[in-house]
Image (cartoon, rainbow, N blue to C red):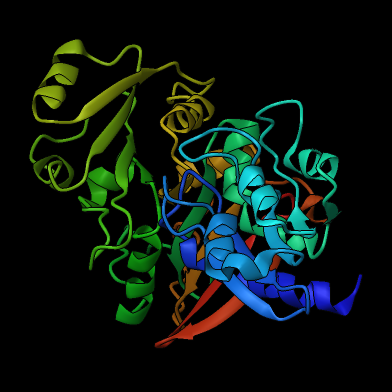
Length: 368
């Protein structure tokens, strides 16, 4: 791989990240244009959903200098009509002679791909430059397109000895204000924040981003028997941020009707083998609503159910310098768990950050 290709693709990746939270359910994409002399003359990224794509923005900046030049783009240019015209047409009309692609589009919109079309028009195409990094950018988009469900982020705060609450279930606050602020910032990039009814009944949370973030997340509750209290913070604030309640087919109709009259959207979902609402069906339903990133904040049984089914894609963990102790104190991830340590895949791309007195760790599950 020519060093220049890697350099400019890295720049395109950095540009793409500026679209996080603005472009979903579309992918984050960045682009750079070099003129025929190898001088950068245009940069761009996909800035908002429904707006021009990265290639179009970069080529517009380059103007006539793009002719005979090279386009670097993190994701294969689209070759279909969506909310905007195909990017391949924009590339072709500018006279670009070479296109360098980070990763190919996982969404199969039509038989002829963008890369194939460009090659058929005599444009040189190189793909797979910094492919792993470029693919990581679009992991949420790829999950939605190929699995039909959102990219699932698991989040919890815990003590140094791995407890999220004491034996009496007291948990506020394990971490300090700096860590909680980062947690709110994460919420502000999500399409939904999901919890089980146990968390709601115990904590009566708002589940909103404070201060407000880029996106207003739908508050999703798994509540098989429609026990969500009508006087809960969630119900009382449903005009500020929507509340989506998943109940079982056996939930009492009168109770469901009361919640709907209070402004809550209620969806009936089949039960799993443990008589809980089926979490896989819940995620599929969120996928049909074009939710790309979902943050799961608990409780332990919900996170465990997702982990057992291999449905957590990324984790955000806040560790406080405190020891709670107690064999009955609650851990963050319940469920059945793994049988043997060698079967456990290490997280990839782990990052560690000190926030106040606490440590913020985040990384992706090996397959993501």
